[in-house]
Image 1: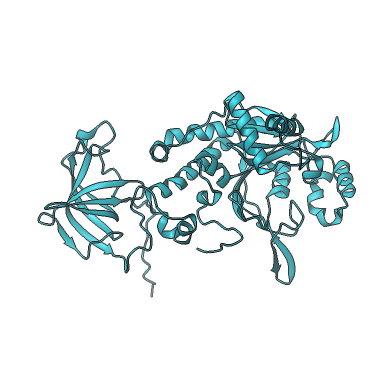
Image 2 (image 1 turned 60 degrees about the vertical axis):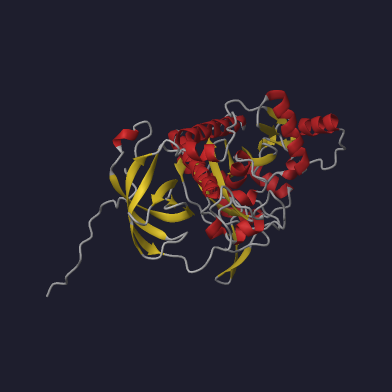
Length: 449
Protein backbone atom coordinates (compact mmCIF):
# COMPACT_ATOMS: atom_id res chain seq x y z
CA UNK A 1 0.00 0.00 0.00
CA UNK A 2 1.46 3.35 -1.04
CA UNK A 3 1.74 6.15 1.48
CA UNK A 4 -0.39 9.18 0.60
CA UNK A 5 2.08 12.05 0.65
CA UNK A 6 0.86 15.60 0.32
CA UNK A 7 2.73 17.48 -2.40
CA UNK A 8 4.02 20.97 -1.72
CA UNK A 9 5.01 22.98 -4.75
CA UNK A 10 7.99 25.33 -4.78
CA UNK A 11 6.52 28.77 -5.34
CA UNK A 12 6.60 32.18 -3.73
CA UNK A 13 3.79 33.28 -1.44
CA UNK A 14 2.69 36.82 -2.30
CA UNK A 15 1.58 39.17 0.44
CA UNK A 16 -1.88 40.70 0.21
CA UNK A 17 -0.15 44.08 0.22
CA UNK A 18 1.89 43.56 -2.98
CA UNK A 19 0.99 45.74 -5.96
CA UNK A 20 -2.08 47.09 -4.23
CA UNK A 21 -1.14 50.74 -3.99
CA UNK A 22 -0.96 53.40 -6.70
CA UNK A 23 2.57 53.87 -7.99
CA UNK A 24 4.19 57.20 -7.18
CA UNK A 25 3.29 59.72 -9.86
CA UNK A 26 0.62 57.39 -11.33
CA UNK A 27 -2.18 57.83 -8.83
CA UNK A 28 -4.98 57.38 -11.33
CA UNK A 29 -3.94 53.78 -12.06
CA UNK A 30 -4.98 52.61 -8.60
CA UNK A 31 -7.95 54.82 -7.84
CA UNK A 32 -11.37 53.34 -7.10
CA UNK A 33 -10.01 49.80 -7.08
CA UNK A 34 -10.88 47.45 -4.24
CA UNK A 35 -7.88 45.77 -2.69
CA UNK A 36 -7.01 43.27 0.05
CA UNK A 37 -4.55 44.37 2.71
CA UNK A 38 -3.23 43.17 6.07
CA UNK A 39 -1.34 44.67 8.99
CA UNK A 40 -1.67 45.87 12.58
CA UNK A 41 -3.97 48.59 13.83
CA UNK A 42 -1.45 51.28 14.74
CA UNK A 43 -3.93 53.91 15.91
CA UNK A 44 -7.67 54.60 15.91
CA UNK A 45 -8.80 58.25 15.95
CA UNK A 46 -12.53 58.63 16.46
CA UNK A 47 -14.17 61.48 14.58
CA UNK A 48 -17.80 62.58 14.20
CA UNK A 49 -19.58 59.68 12.49
CA UNK A 50 -16.46 57.79 11.44
CA UNK A 51 -12.89 56.95 12.54
CA UNK A 52 -9.44 57.21 11.05
CA UNK A 53 -7.68 53.88 11.35
CA UNK A 54 -3.91 53.98 10.82
CA UNK A 55 -2.77 50.60 9.56
CA UNK A 56 0.85 49.56 10.11
CA UNK A 57 2.13 47.28 7.37
CA UNK A 58 5.63 45.86 7.06
CA UNK A 59 7.01 49.06 5.56
CA UNK A 60 4.58 51.97 6.02
CA UNK A 61 1.67 53.57 7.89
CA UNK A 62 -1.52 53.86 5.84
CA UNK A 63 -4.45 56.14 6.57
CA UNK A 64 -7.78 54.31 6.39
CA UNK A 65 -11.32 55.59 6.87
CA UNK A 66 -13.59 53.38 8.98
CA UNK A 67 -17.35 53.98 8.76
CA UNK A 68 -18.97 51.22 10.79
CA UNK A 69 -22.17 51.73 8.86
CA UNK A 70 -20.42 50.81 5.62
CA UNK A 71 -17.79 48.35 6.86
CA UNK A 72 -18.40 44.83 8.15
CA UNK A 73 -16.14 44.00 11.12
CA UNK A 74 -15.55 40.43 12.27
CA UNK A 75 -14.02 40.36 15.75
CA UNK A 76 -12.90 42.83 18.40
CA UNK A 77 -11.18 45.78 16.73
CA UNK A 78 -8.63 47.63 18.87
CA UNK A 79 -5.16 49.10 18.59
CA UNK A 80 -2.44 46.49 17.88
CA UNK A 81 -5.00 44.01 16.56
CA UNK A 82 -3.78 42.13 13.48
CA UNK A 83 -6.29 42.37 10.66
CA UNK A 84 -6.97 41.47 7.06
CA UNK A 85 -9.22 43.91 5.24
CA UNK A 86 -10.89 44.86 2.00
CA UNK A 87 -10.76 48.53 1.07
CA UNK A 88 -11.33 51.00 -1.75
CA UNK A 89 -8.43 53.22 -2.88
CA UNK A 90 -9.68 56.81 -2.83
CA UNK A 91 -7.87 60.01 -3.81
CA UNK A 92 -7.12 62.27 -0.85
CA UNK A 93 -4.86 65.30 -1.55
CA UNK A 94 -4.41 66.00 2.17
CA UNK A 95 -2.79 62.60 2.72
CA UNK A 96 1.01 62.31 2.38
CA UNK A 97 0.52 59.62 -0.25
CA UNK A 98 -2.24 61.41 -2.15
CA UNK A 99 -4.67 58.61 -1.40
CA UNK A 100 -6.33 56.79 1.49
CA UNK A 101 -8.24 53.55 1.97
CA UNK A 102 -11.96 53.36 2.67
CA UNK A 103 -12.47 50.11 4.55
CA UNK A 104 -15.34 47.86 3.45
CA UNK A 105 -14.59 44.65 5.36
CA UNK A 106 -12.31 43.79 8.32
CA UNK A 107 -11.38 40.37 9.67
CA UNK A 108 -9.64 40.53 13.06
CA UNK A 109 -7.00 37.79 13.04
CA UNK A 110 -5.81 38.41 16.61
CA UNK A 111 -6.27 41.04 19.30
CA UNK A 112 -4.00 42.06 22.21
CA UNK A 113 -4.80 40.63 25.64
CA UNK A 114 -3.88 43.76 27.59
CA UNK A 115 -2.99 47.41 27.23
CA UNK A 116 0.45 48.29 25.89
CA UNK A 117 2.90 49.10 28.74
CA UNK A 118 4.38 51.93 26.69
CA UNK A 119 2.82 54.19 24.05
CA UNK A 120 4.34 53.30 20.67
CA UNK A 121 1.99 54.96 18.18
CA UNK A 122 3.22 58.53 18.51
CA UNK A 123 5.75 60.19 16.24
CA UNK A 124 8.42 59.03 18.66
CA UNK A 125 8.43 57.25 22.00
CA UNK A 126 8.46 59.50 25.06
CA UNK A 127 10.36 57.18 27.38
CA UNK A 128 13.83 56.66 28.83
CA UNK A 129 16.40 54.55 27.02
CA UNK A 130 16.02 51.82 29.65
CA UNK A 131 12.26 51.67 29.11
CA UNK A 132 12.81 51.68 25.37
CA UNK A 133 15.10 48.65 25.69
CA UNK A 134 13.11 46.83 28.40
CA UNK A 135 10.10 46.70 26.06
CA UNK A 136 12.14 46.29 22.87
CA UNK A 137 9.82 43.75 21.16
CA UNK A 138 7.06 46.38 21.38
CA UNK A 139 8.94 49.67 21.00
CA UNK A 140 10.50 48.47 17.73
CA UNK A 141 7.00 48.70 16.25
CA UNK A 142 7.22 52.48 16.41
CA UNK A 143 7.76 53.92 12.94
CA UNK A 144 10.98 55.78 13.80
CA UNK A 145 12.44 52.91 15.81
CA UNK A 146 11.72 50.55 12.93
CA UNK A 147 13.36 52.95 10.48
CA UNK A 148 16.69 52.78 12.38
CA UNK A 149 17.01 49.11 11.57
CA UNK A 150 15.74 49.41 8.03
CA UNK A 151 18.61 51.85 7.47
CA UNK A 152 20.99 49.43 9.17
CA UNK A 153 19.72 46.73 6.81
CA UNK A 154 20.39 49.10 3.92
CA UNK A 155 23.96 49.70 5.07
CA UNK A 156 24.61 45.94 5.12
CA UNK A 157 23.04 45.51 1.69
CA UNK A 158 25.20 48.35 0.40
CA UNK A 159 28.38 46.90 1.95
CA UNK A 160 27.63 43.47 0.48
CA UNK A 161 26.82 44.81 -2.97
CA UNK A 162 30.08 46.77 -3.05
CA UNK A 163 32.29 43.96 -1.73
CA UNK A 164 30.78 41.40 -4.10
CA UNK A 165 31.39 43.77 -7.01
CA UNK A 166 35.02 44.08 -5.88
CA UNK A 167 35.36 40.27 -5.95
CA UNK A 168 35.33 39.63 -2.20
CA UNK A 169 34.06 36.19 -1.14
CA UNK A 170 31.66 36.13 1.82
CA UNK A 171 32.74 33.72 4.57
CA UNK A 172 31.26 32.56 7.88
CA UNK A 173 33.84 31.92 10.58
CA UNK A 174 33.50 30.13 13.97
CA UNK A 175 32.26 32.07 16.98
CA UNK A 176 33.57 29.44 19.41
CA UNK A 177 37.36 29.56 19.36
CA UNK A 178 40.41 28.15 21.14
CA UNK A 179 42.26 31.46 21.40
CA UNK A 180 41.16 35.09 21.30
CA UNK A 181 42.44 37.19 18.41
CA UNK A 182 43.09 40.14 20.69
CA UNK A 183 44.18 38.21 23.80
CA UNK A 184 44.01 39.68 27.28
CA UNK A 185 41.18 39.50 29.78
CA UNK A 186 38.44 40.94 27.55
CA UNK A 187 37.26 37.55 26.38
CA UNK A 188 34.27 35.39 27.36
CA UNK A 189 35.33 31.96 28.58
CA UNK A 190 33.02 28.95 28.28
CA UNK A 191 33.08 25.26 29.12
CA UNK A 192 33.27 23.39 25.82
CA UNK A 193 32.69 19.74 26.71
CA UNK A 194 35.16 19.96 29.58
CA UNK A 195 37.68 22.10 27.71
CA UNK A 196 38.27 25.84 27.82
CA UNK A 197 36.98 27.74 24.82
CA UNK A 198 36.06 31.35 24.15
CA UNK A 199 33.57 33.48 22.26
CA UNK A 200 35.29 35.08 19.28
CA UNK A 201 36.46 38.66 19.74
CA UNK A 202 37.01 38.93 16.00
CA UNK A 203 37.18 36.72 12.88
CA UNK A 204 40.78 37.96 12.52
CA UNK A 205 42.70 34.66 12.36
CA UNK A 206 40.17 33.03 10.05
CA UNK A 207 39.84 35.86 7.60
CA UNK A 208 43.64 35.99 7.33
CA UNK A 209 43.63 32.23 6.67
CA UNK A 210 41.05 32.74 3.94
CA UNK A 211 43.18 35.36 2.19
CA UNK A 212 45.43 32.42 1.35
CA UNK A 213 42.40 30.72 -0.20
CA UNK A 214 40.26 33.41 -1.86
CA UNK A 215 42.54 36.48 -1.74
CA UNK A 216 39.65 38.80 -0.82
CA UNK A 217 37.10 37.85 1.85
CA UNK A 218 34.47 39.53 4.01
CA UNK A 219 32.10 38.69 6.83
CA UNK A 220 29.24 40.47 8.58
CA UNK A 221 28.66 38.77 11.91
CA UNK A 222 28.65 38.98 15.72
CA UNK A 223 31.75 39.43 17.87
CA UNK A 224 32.03 39.42 21.65
CA UNK A 225 34.06 41.60 24.01
CA UNK A 226 34.07 41.01 27.79
CA UNK A 227 34.81 44.64 28.53
CA UNK A 228 33.30 45.97 31.75
CA UNK A 229 32.52 49.35 30.23
CA UNK A 230 29.21 51.01 30.99
CA UNK A 231 29.28 53.85 28.47
CA UNK A 232 27.23 55.19 25.57
CA UNK A 233 29.79 53.75 23.11
CA UNK A 234 30.29 50.16 24.28
CA UNK A 235 28.47 46.88 23.68
CA UNK A 236 29.53 43.39 24.75
CA UNK A 237 28.13 41.83 21.60
CA UNK A 238 28.09 43.78 18.37
CA UNK A 239 28.02 43.22 14.63
CA UNK A 240 31.36 43.57 12.88
CA UNK A 241 31.74 44.25 9.17
CA UNK A 242 35.12 42.69 8.38
CA UNK A 243 37.09 42.41 5.19
CA UNK A 244 40.59 41.21 4.43
CA UNK A 245 42.48 41.48 1.13
CA UNK A 246 45.76 40.15 -0.22
CA UNK A 247 48.47 41.49 -2.52
CA UNK A 248 48.25 45.01 -1.13
CA UNK A 249 51.00 47.55 -1.72
CA UNK A 250 50.35 49.52 1.47
CA UNK A 251 47.91 49.71 4.37
CA UNK A 252 46.54 52.77 2.56
CA UNK A 253 45.00 50.36 0.04
CA UNK A 254 42.75 49.25 2.90
CA UNK A 255 41.84 52.86 3.71
CA UNK A 256 41.00 53.56 0.06
CA UNK A 257 38.86 50.44 -0.16
CA UNK A 258 36.95 51.35 2.99
CA UNK A 259 36.30 54.90 1.77
CA UNK A 260 34.94 53.47 -1.48
CA UNK A 261 32.81 50.94 0.41
CA UNK A 262 31.27 53.63 2.63
CA UNK A 263 30.66 55.96 -0.31
CA UNK A 264 28.96 53.16 -2.25
CA UNK A 265 26.82 52.04 0.70
CA UNK A 266 25.63 55.57 1.45
CA UNK A 267 24.67 55.97 -2.21
CA UNK A 268 22.77 52.68 -1.94
CA UNK A 269 20.88 54.06 1.06
CA UNK A 270 19.92 57.20 -0.82
CA UNK A 271 18.65 55.13 -3.75
CA UNK A 272 16.71 52.50 -1.80
CA UNK A 273 15.81 53.95 1.62
CA UNK A 274 14.67 57.48 0.82
CA UNK A 275 11.54 57.18 2.99
CA UNK A 276 13.43 56.11 6.14
CA UNK A 277 16.17 58.70 5.62
CA UNK A 278 13.54 61.44 5.33
CA UNK A 279 11.63 60.19 8.38
CA UNK A 280 14.75 60.36 10.57
CA UNK A 281 16.11 63.51 8.88
CA UNK A 282 19.45 61.82 8.21
CA UNK A 283 22.38 63.99 7.12
CA UNK A 284 24.28 61.86 4.60
CA UNK A 285 28.03 62.61 4.82
CA UNK A 286 30.45 62.82 1.90
CA UNK A 287 32.94 59.93 1.90
CA UNK A 288 34.61 60.24 -1.49
CA UNK A 289 37.69 61.92 -0.04
CA UNK A 290 38.65 61.38 3.62
CA UNK A 291 41.47 63.31 5.35
CA UNK A 292 44.22 61.38 7.11
CA UNK A 293 46.55 62.26 10.00
CA UNK A 294 49.18 60.32 11.94
CA UNK A 295 48.29 59.41 15.52
CA UNK A 296 51.05 61.39 17.28
CA UNK A 297 50.39 64.44 15.09
CA UNK A 298 46.70 64.23 15.96
CA UNK A 299 47.49 64.07 19.68
CA UNK A 300 49.72 67.12 19.44
CA UNK A 301 47.16 69.01 17.34
CA UNK A 302 44.41 68.41 19.91
CA UNK A 303 46.69 69.36 22.80
CA UNK A 304 47.79 72.62 21.21
CA UNK A 305 44.40 73.61 19.76
CA UNK A 306 42.49 73.05 23.00
CA UNK A 307 45.32 73.62 25.50
CA UNK A 308 45.00 70.07 26.84
CA UNK A 309 47.78 68.11 28.56
CA UNK A 310 48.99 64.93 26.80
CA UNK A 311 47.85 62.23 29.22
CA UNK A 312 47.37 58.85 27.50
CA UNK A 313 50.32 58.54 25.09
CA UNK A 314 49.28 55.45 23.16
CA UNK A 315 45.58 55.95 22.59
CA UNK A 316 42.85 58.57 22.37
CA UNK A 317 40.57 59.53 25.21
CA UNK A 318 36.91 59.63 24.06
CA UNK A 319 36.90 63.41 24.35
CA UNK A 320 39.96 63.62 22.08
CA UNK A 321 38.16 61.71 19.34
CA UNK A 322 35.34 64.26 19.47
CA UNK A 323 37.73 67.21 19.47
CA UNK A 324 39.75 65.85 16.53
CA UNK A 325 36.57 65.38 14.50
CA UNK A 326 35.55 68.96 15.31
CA UNK A 327 38.88 70.23 13.98
CA UNK A 328 38.64 68.09 10.84
CA UNK A 329 35.05 69.13 10.17
CA UNK A 330 35.91 72.80 10.56
CA UNK A 331 39.05 72.68 8.41
CA UNK A 332 38.12 70.15 5.72
CA UNK A 333 34.33 69.77 5.87
CA UNK A 334 34.65 65.99 6.34
CA UNK A 335 32.68 64.02 8.91
CA UNK A 336 35.36 61.29 8.68
CA UNK A 337 39.06 61.16 9.45
CA UNK A 338 41.61 58.34 9.20
CA UNK A 339 44.11 58.27 12.07
CA UNK A 340 47.18 56.23 11.07
CA UNK A 341 50.41 54.82 12.56
CA UNK A 342 49.14 53.84 15.99
CA UNK A 343 51.79 52.92 18.58
CA UNK A 344 52.93 49.29 18.57
CA UNK A 345 52.19 49.13 22.30
CA UNK A 346 48.44 49.46 21.61
CA UNK A 347 48.10 47.18 18.59
CA UNK A 348 47.85 43.36 18.39
CA UNK A 349 50.80 41.06 17.71
CA UNK A 350 49.83 40.58 14.05
CA UNK A 351 50.03 44.32 13.24
CA UNK A 352 52.93 45.11 10.91
CA UNK A 353 55.38 47.69 12.23
CA UNK A 354 56.71 50.60 10.22
CA UNK A 355 60.21 49.85 8.90
CA UNK A 356 61.17 53.50 9.38
CA UNK A 357 59.93 53.54 12.98
CA UNK A 358 59.18 50.19 14.67
CA UNK A 359 57.52 52.05 17.55
CA UNK A 360 54.45 52.55 15.34
CA UNK A 361 52.36 50.20 13.21
CA UNK A 362 50.97 50.35 9.70
CA UNK A 363 47.49 50.55 11.13
CA UNK A 364 44.62 52.99 11.34
CA UNK A 365 41.29 53.88 12.90
CA UNK A 366 38.45 55.61 11.12
CA UNK A 367 36.66 58.23 13.22
CA UNK A 368 33.16 59.30 12.23
CA UNK A 369 31.43 62.27 13.85
CA UNK A 370 33.46 61.99 17.04
CA UNK A 371 33.67 58.22 17.45
CA UNK A 372 36.02 55.46 16.32
CA UNK A 373 34.02 53.13 14.07
CA UNK A 374 36.77 51.10 12.36
CA UNK A 375 40.13 49.58 13.23
CA UNK A 376 42.34 48.14 10.51
CA UNK A 377 45.80 47.87 9.03
CA UNK A 378 48.43 45.74 7.37
CA UNK A 379 49.25 42.33 8.91
CA UNK A 380 52.59 40.57 9.25
CA UNK A 381 52.77 37.98 6.48
CA UNK A 382 56.35 36.69 6.95
CA UNK A 383 56.68 33.69 9.30
CA UNK A 384 59.99 34.63 10.90
CA UNK A 385 58.89 38.22 11.41
CA UNK A 386 55.65 37.09 13.04
CA UNK A 387 57.39 34.55 15.23
CA UNK A 388 59.96 37.11 16.38
CA UNK A 389 57.28 39.62 17.34
CA UNK A 390 55.31 37.04 19.31
CA UNK A 391 58.43 36.02 21.24
CA UNK A 392 59.32 39.66 21.84
CA UNK A 393 55.86 40.18 23.34
CA UNK A 394 56.28 37.17 25.64
CA UNK A 395 53.70 35.03 23.81
CA UNK A 396 53.82 31.25 23.44
CA UNK A 397 53.79 30.51 19.67
CA UNK A 398 52.74 26.89 20.29
CA UNK A 399 49.29 28.17 21.31
CA UNK A 400 48.87 29.69 17.84
CA UNK A 401 50.12 26.75 15.79
CA UNK A 402 47.21 26.57 13.33
CA UNK A 403 47.33 30.34 12.79
CA UNK A 404 51.08 30.23 12.09
CA UNK A 405 50.59 27.50 9.48
CA UNK A 406 49.50 30.16 6.98
CA UNK A 407 52.75 32.08 7.51
CA UNK A 408 54.86 28.94 7.12
CA UNK A 409 52.99 28.04 3.94
CA UNK A 410 53.45 31.49 2.37
CA UNK A 411 51.13 34.48 2.51
CA UNK A 412 50.91 37.59 0.31
CA UNK A 413 51.13 41.07 1.82
CA UNK A 414 47.65 41.57 3.19
CA UNK A 415 45.48 43.59 5.54
CA UNK A 416 41.95 44.40 6.47
CA UNK A 417 39.61 45.99 8.94
CA UNK A 418 36.63 45.60 11.23
CA UNK A 419 33.81 48.17 11.23
CA UNK A 420 31.32 48.28 14.11
CA UNK A 421 27.90 48.27 12.48
CA UNK A 422 26.03 49.64 15.50
CA UNK A 423 28.54 52.45 16.02
CA UNK A 424 28.44 53.38 12.36
CA UNK A 425 24.64 53.40 12.37
CA UNK A 426 24.53 55.48 15.56
CA UNK A 427 26.85 58.13 14.15
CA UNK A 428 25.08 58.21 10.79
CA UNK A 429 21.75 58.79 12.55
CA UNK A 430 23.37 60.96 15.23
CA UNK A 431 22.00 58.87 18.08
CA UNK A 432 23.35 59.59 21.54
CA UNK A 433 23.85 55.97 22.62
CA UNK A 434 25.09 53.02 20.57
CA UNK A 435 22.43 50.84 22.24
CA UNK A 436 19.82 52.75 20.24
CA UNK A 437 21.36 51.24 17.10
CA UNK A 438 21.47 47.67 18.48
CA UNK A 439 18.39 45.58 17.83
CA UNK A 440 18.56 43.74 21.18
CA UNK A 441 21.67 45.17 22.87
CA UNK A 442 23.95 43.16 25.14
CA UNK A 443 25.90 45.17 27.69
CA UNK A 444 27.18 44.52 31.22
CA UNK A 445 23.64 44.84 32.61
CA UNK A 446 21.44 43.43 29.86
CA UNK A 447 20.85 39.92 28.51
CA UNK A 448 17.10 40.31 27.97
CA UNK A 449 14.97 40.63 26.01
